[in-house]
Image (cartoon, rainbow over all chains, first blue to last red):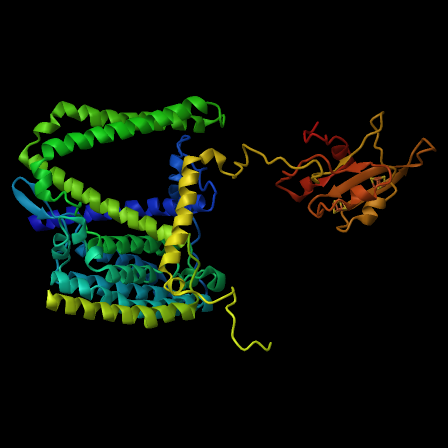
Length: 419
Length: 168
Ligand code: SF4
Ligand code: SF4
């Protein structure tokens, strides 16, 4: 019973983070691409004049998609056409089950591991589930009875198969080093100094894995299954309304998985360099107050910036949007006051239990922060690089990545045998 | 082509490091992040025009919605010579000529309609006019309506278009 409740809570936490990240990522994609291209990006949709720099736009998008006609092409396969987006999204979410987002949380003397399912074949599970995602794509492309969609699906399959191999091989070196397939072991093995992280021990493996993840998630420069310029928009060409939204959300969910996997395998997972759990718990009396002071100061400065803008741009638009900087100033000032006010609770005299929970929170925060950073890298790369040509893609996958991944396995094995 | 050696389309072969892609990828990412940081710190320097609130300023030669010039007494300067409707490549000026009481003027337009939906804003009507009766210097480019009829503008409408873009 307890296992069920704690698992459900963990699943709820993960779903909140992931599904909450999706609209934020869509926003970051639009705003980031705008800033990269010297544009302003979305800044119109508002709730009572509060625009949050365009963050309200995803809500408007969802409303629009919900009310759109759910169109099905005449000769599409009824069942498979409807099933495909659900399958893609479902599979995209499945992978998270094995990804540890913290080590444990101690409540009332009981330690709960912060991973939904601590499988001893964790990595294999991830690889297996991730490649299932192609089925949804192929189904969608085939069932819509459109040649562009079908071509997109075919491209997606061949690309996934090609890069799956180098992806699998690129992490064998890591498995050899940590001699485990369990993701919690791999993360725990990367504790302590920053050179214990996977990318420092397996630089080649890390690069190959990151490139393969880009290809697996169909993101630029490997987004040939979508290829707007030649395939209109690829496998989801015929989809509209929420079915399209599911494909769209699955793409971003896959991106979050990709980032989470890169973080877990090569960038220390929930580890904070040097600040291990014992260090945090031992010095919580100093770390927590310093943390609070930094937060109060940063938030205070941000709120001052907002108030300055509020004073300067009082009548910029002449409507509700003029209230926004003032509102944001009040919110950030309250956050600063909250951080400063928690000094009343004597953070320097933090108890043992509270210190343990604080350490857990810091670790979860570190994990989410790293995942968000890698998601930004996905976006950053997309708006920097052009798309590969199809033969270049295959050439890179089979003639460069595969031999390099094999060489990496052999070299790691030799090195481990000698040391 | 008699070239013996196949030349690289962008001149020269790629070097080893270029062929590994990665250094060039990082260089490109450096360039884009520079743009992001600059734009984050200097939001007000963004070239984007926040359209409904801000308007781009166009040059005085910009061809906007037409207007008909008036004589001192307020009647149209146009003498219904049909030069403009003949010159118009979109065939969108429709004039019905009438006899003017003043024999020195001879003719005047009884109706003078322009179908703005067909107009391509080429300015040939303006150039063809022998008496500078039609001009496109209003600077009005926000031409919107909910029915087609609204774009079929009449003589009275055109006579009252002001050059500073305001309407009377
Ligand atoms: S601008 Fe060109 S198309 Fe428009 S009315 Fe004049 S001549 Fe015709
Ligand atoms: S060319 Fe000038 S004068 Fe002649 S009909 Fe046109 S507007 Fe009138």
